[in-house]
Image 1 (cartoon, rainbow, N blue to C red):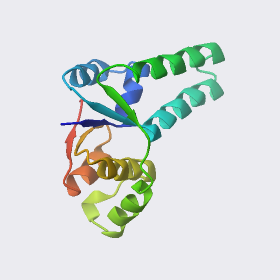
Image 2: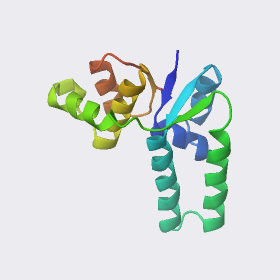
Image 3: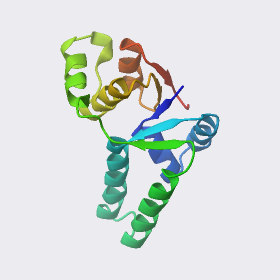
Image 4: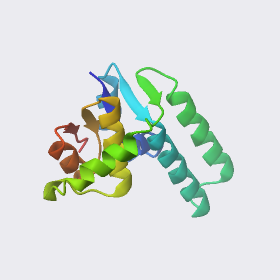
Length: 144
């Protein structure tokens, strides 16, 4: 059974935080970890933001981007393109107006991607996204 890696946990691999070890352990226990092209571009944007904010040099950012590319070519990671129907699915989810299923747009798009890819398990560090995932019948793993 596949696990979808949300950007909130993907970033913990690039930028060590208290939950990094737990995220790494959870991923290591999986046979198949789906990372969408949406998560990859979000991670790249966060690297760029650190350059723009003066927290990283361009050289360090390029090294992190190469590290991300190399990582996503390793097992158990499977980099998958966003299915074209993901936005429509995300919109359909929102139109249900479930009070316990609200989350920001990018998190909602990740849930649409999960639905389109038929992945029902989510590794996230975002509580609102986890609540929305549960409302949709997905299970969530929280590394905290």
